[in-house]
Image: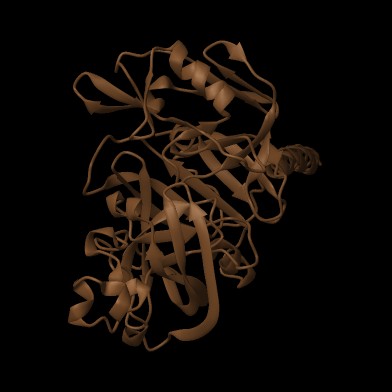
Length: 393
């Protein structure tokens, strides 16, 4: 009898402990959605201090491209084989004057003035892929570093084909770029991996989720600052389908997004070097090397710490020993942006202050790579929210 009573007692304690543990896990899960056990994690490589890229294989047979991780873009794109090649069919006499009398306008553009954005890029040739599907839809848009223009097509995309955890999306709609702004020539990436919330067109993450390839509609980004390296160095991880427990702590709190297609959320109070500012909307853009803010706030902040604006380069230059504070009140927490992430050396005695003014947009701030280097980012596609976590390593 004693044994049965003791056993019943132990069972009761066990059930109570189990119930308590389940309740705790349920409470924890309600804040960070721990429910799946499959995720697809891929190394991210840091080029030039602020270009975080992954390797994506496209087509059959697959060809690898270096794509920048871009949470602000709904279009994933690579340069078309003819990008930067100039117009076709121009006759030799088009190089002579008067060109406009004999040739079409496109043939008369001097070679040094033609599109140079694609010259150093690895280009995609539809004829080389057995799985390419043609589309008749064109696209064109402007970015902070130039114009992007081309047409859509479909092919098989595989993220992490060499990492041991490949994630393949068949028949993925992407952009084949035929015109690319000249400033893109200075970048290390070939194209863009769009990871916005957009469903028209569908971003890579959205199509992977809708195709049932991931257990959870989550994406985690871990960026770390490794310094300048034009050849690229390991700079973090992109995790699709779950949380990055190896590199990131718990999500501090979730912030609802304000847009159906973009990762736009509310900043309750920015504070630049001790000066509190009014709250505003912000865009998470991991492809940008800068912290963007309104001119009327960025200008006095930069001048206040002794930075000078270089007009012909559109950059702020300051001493490398600059020391200041930048914080953002978001949701229930204050996030500190270390000054080191906003200062990049351009010469032994001069550094660039990684801030820029935003133009007219639906949002006031753009939190680019400097903020992503300070906190892990977690994106919840299903519930429309974004969270930030401490970086563990």
